[in-house]
Image 1 (cartoon, rainbow over the protein chains, first blue to last red):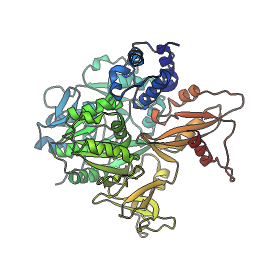
Image 2 (tube, rainbow over the protein chains, first blue to last red):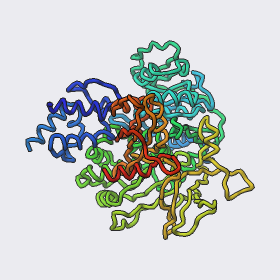
Image 3 (cartoon, chains in turn green, orange):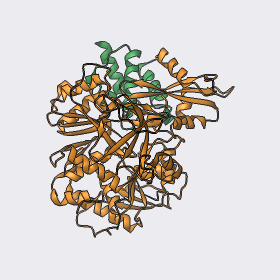
Image 4 (cartoon, chains in turn cyan, yellow):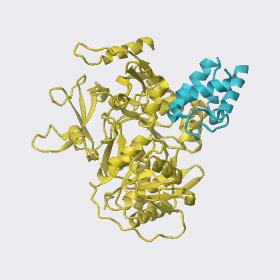
Length: 82
Length: 533
């Protein structure tokens, strides 16, 4: 499964299941939609670290990196190279 | 004469500090003179639309300067404000509107559209004041709702609103907290209740017009009373924190630094996140002089980090409930070099009284003694709106004065006295917990789960957590032949429960363990989680 699909699945089933959405657009603003809030962010970070075997540094926990599925994919790819 | 209604605080600050910035949010701000004028304009509009003394007016707005204008405008009109979180589930919003008999809302176009399209009883809301610019965007097909758009920022003085005769015992606002019956409880707070706390806190914490308060708590949370009204009383500045920033600890730390925040007041979990992931060493926090935390337990290891990095600040553990505002506080001195140190909840504020009764109904006074905490003070709320039975259960005659019906609030919290005479929180008499500072009655979640047609039984168990206080897990027994999944449950809960009450961990079982008396064995379930976790 692609990084994007994997993240989308996790967000839809774990973080935003209450919204009843079936899909998320790669560029949809997840912060604006309230999908990612402080309740969900920490869970999401643990999921990303475990699933993609990466380490997300505190300084990378900023809105730019979690704005949309695309920005999270970019973060994962960048961390995976390091 | 002293201020005896909450909005009098604003009148005084508008006279004494007309040009001080009262509220700032992102790039916008208003002075005290403007805040006074804008809230006058709203009060007049409300009165012209038929709102009168004692009416409940909902505030359905995201965090914004307009929120502050709204609550002051509603108070000036003689009405009672009821904050409604626009992110609350529709079922809960419907309940609050019905239960409080809210007929008029102060709101923004988007929020109004969402609520009206989900309103169960279409005739419940009949008036809406749509505040701010761009009110022409209303696309409502809801003809029964009379919408008035109000540009509070318009130039020129509004004609004077009619000042209502009110006593300080009149209700000022209603805040909702979790209720064990499956619905939230509306705590009705009088002007006197709020002012007793506000006046004391302004004095006790030596607040001045130079202070900059970070308003973190949402309006429906009683911590907002300190941020807003203490600042307004002193002519200080309320810096509204954009909601999204509290999600990102590094950004939150930058915000406190850049905005030169001097007074911080939040639930503990926000500060533990900040200590854990905020990279505090990057900032100086020179302006920060007061840090209040409350709501749940602050682990000593995080407090140590905060105290080191925010070295100009005095730290206070504040204890209270919506029903009696904050009543105890513990000023942090030396932090023991022991991670299992439990920070005391301290002693009552000046002019506040609390006492604890043991099982024999005697007041406890010796170190080591344990009892249930009662609050006796002018802060004790008027009761639960539209719920006499629950009010009688929690607001009880003071057992120390058997010849009087003096009312005290029975908190349900168990406390122990330590060797220095401070109270230590030692548990609850019921199944209420705190998670991320929110009070949660586990029965409320259980009642919602039990309403699912395919659930035979459900029990909700808290799991202690360093950062958030408690995480919520649910054990569910589905009906035979009804395969239920995680998503089914979350989707079912979402329209009824706020996000922070939706169980994070779900386990499906064929049956639940029972005690010898036939009750669900909660202890066994908790131990099971502790072992597997």
